[in-house]
Every structure is written in structure tokens, then in C-alpha cells.
Amino acid sequence: MRLMLTSSLLLLLVLVPVMLWSMARALPETTRHAAERVLATDVATLRDVLDAVEDQPHWRRGVARVERSGDGWAEIGARGRVLRFHWTERASAGYRLVFEDHHGLHGTWTATWASTAEGLRLRVEESITLRHPWSRLMARVFFDPDAFLTEWFDDLEAELSRRETTNG
Image (cartoon, rainbow, N blue to C red; front, side, top):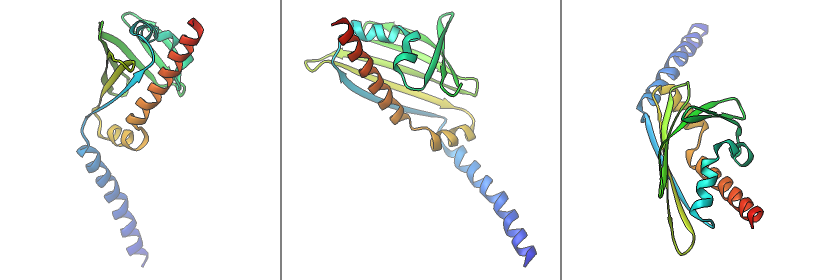
């Protein structure tokens, strides 16, 4: 009986990690997510908020501080995670940047906007690449990119509203 229990436990200890590794390897390295919203603001105000990256800790949840460096900046999260960013395009109708951390995550963030009768339509697209299979599996379990984009838009709208109220 004891031998059977030990064998079953050993089989479980081998089988579960192998199954998890197989699942992790099957996940795509790159995922893409997008969201859009119509904002009650103008292009100049939106660009001011996006350009002032050092102000992000004041209006974005989870950002503890921002440090400028060279042609980009580092965003330090409330839990100490560091993401490095730099602009690759800053055009009149949109911005594009790349980001990375020291754990192998990297990606692109693209924002495009257009004036409409309802307001300024902002579309954000993110492409996130995680090379290591365990990282992909952990990201699937612990991170919801769609909820993150929703939170980012909510924080942005609150900041735009605050600036509108302050600048009158």
C-alpha cells in the first residue's frame, strides 16, 4: 500500500509539471490586445498628458515613479517592477512606443486618434511578447491585458477631466 501511494505521488510530481510545461509551450509568444474610447478632450490636451510621462505616477494606478533616461524612460511599478519605454513614432494622428523589462517581456504600444462629432476617438493597441513558456503561463494566470487597458483608459479619462477642470 505504501509503495503504491509513493508511486502515485511520484507519478503526480512528474506528470503535473510535464503537463504544465506542455501547456505553456503551446501558448503563443505574442498576444495582441486593443481597446478604444471616445474622450471628451482635444488632441493638444491628450498629447500633453501622453508626453508628460513623469506625471504618470499622479494619475495612473500602479505606477510608483518614472525616471527619464536618454530617449526614453523607466516606469517603476508599485511592486518594484521596471519597464523601459522609448518612443518610436510621435505623429499628429498617433504615437508608437516599444517597451521591455529585464525578464524577457517586450512589446509595442500604439495609440491612434481622430476627431469625431462625439469627441476624440482614441484607439490603443498593445502587442506583448514573452519568450519563456513559464512566463507565458504565469501571465495568462495572473494578468488580464483587457482589464489593464480598461483601467488605463479610466485613469486617462480621470486625468483629462482633472486638467479640463483645472484649466477651465
